[in-house]
Length: 528
Image 1 (cartoon, rainbow, N blue to C red):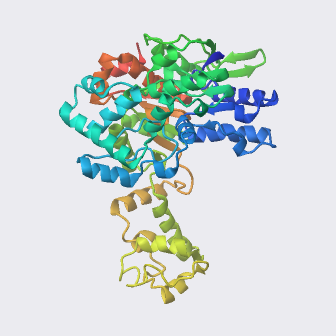
Image 2: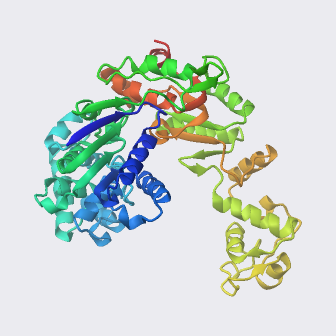
Image 3: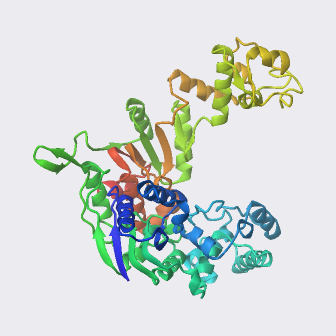
C-alpha cells in the first residue's frame, strides 16, 4: 500500500490532476470497478465518471460503481433502501414527540455532513457523532449552551430510540455503521483509491476512509489544509496535516493572479499549524517564456474600500462577473437588501433575485398582449396566479380545469373562454396585481437598468463557506465578523485566517476588500 498526498493550493488544478490519474489507470488496464473515486459531492463524483466515460466510450455508468460520495458508498454497502432513511415526515413526528425543532438537512445523497440541525440540543448531538466523541465531552465543550445535561440526554436517547424502533438511519448513522462493521465483504477491494477534498472530511469519515485504505493498492489523498474551513462542523485540518505518506504539491495556480497571491500568501503564512507550500500565481506567456503576472497589471489587482457603498459603485461601473462574499448569513442578507434597493440583479444561494415564477408570469403577459403570441396553459396558470379573482380573472376560471393542456392560447381565446378580464393594453404590473408591491418596484428598476432577466445574473452573493470551490473575475470580500466569529477569532485566529484565505483566492482578476465596521479585523487580516 502506497499513499500519495496531493496538496493543491487554490486554482492549481487538483481535480484535473486526479482525473488524469483515473484516465492513466484505465489506459493501463485497471478495471473501472477496481477504482474508487470518492468526492465531496455527488456532482463532483458524477463529473469524474462522465469524463472517464467520454474518454473510454466502451464503458458505461454501471462500470464505475465506486465513483460516489462516502455517504453513498455506506448506503450501498449496508444494503439500505430509500425506505430505511429518515425523511421529512419522520423529523416532523420526532420534533413533536420531543418538543424541539428538527429538520431534514440531508435530503439527497449529496450530503456534506455540515448542515447541522436547527435546535441547539440537536446540534450538540450531531457534533458529538460526527467528531466521534462522547455526548458529555461535546456538551462540556459548548459552554455557551443554554439548558442542562439531563435535557440533552433525554433528547439524545429519544432520537436514538425513535430510529431504533423504526429501523431508520440518517446519513451520519450510515457512516458510523459502515466504520464499526466487522463484515470484511463490506469493504471494497480497490487497486486505486482516490479521496478528494480530504481537508473537509469529518473524524467519522476519516475512520471510514482508513478502513477502505487498508484494502486498497495505490492511494491518492487530495486536499489542502489551508482551505480547511469547516472546523465549526467538526472537520479538523490536523487530520490531513498528520496523515503519513509521500507529499506532492501542485505548485502553479491557473486562477489566482500575482497581486492576490501576494496578500493571500502573507495571510496564510501567519497560520501556526500548517503544511508549508510554495506555489506561484497565474502566469502568462511572453517571447521569453512563461513569467508570473506582474502586480498592478490587468492580470490582477487588490483594492481597498472603506464602505459597502463604495463597492456597489464599483460593481455598477464594472459590468463583468462578480462574486460578493460575507463571513455570515446575517451580513449577506443585509447586502442582498441593499442591492435590491439599488436595483442590482443578482443571485443569492444560487437563486436569482427575481423568482422564476414571477418572471414567467411577466413574460407570459408580455408575449400574450404586446408580442401577440399564443402561450401554453402552464404559462397561463402562472400568470393567473398573480391575478385577483373577479378583477383579473373571473371566478371559477383560475384553475383552468377545462383547458386543453396541449393547446396554445391567444389573448382573445382566454378572454372569451377562460375568464381573463384584464384589457390587453394594461402593463404587466397592473395586470398582475397580486404581485407584491416591493417586488414590482424592484423588477421595474431592473428593467429600467436594462438588466437581462432571462439570463444568469452577473453578480453572485454568497457566504465564504458557500462559495468554496467557486471563482469570479471580480471578488468583493467583506471583512465584517459576526459576534461569535469575532470571539472565536481571538481564541483561534488560524481558523478565521483560513476562511478569509479561501475567500481571497476565489479571485481570477480583481480583489476588492471592504473594511469592517471594527478596523481591527481588517488590519490583521489584510495588512499585517
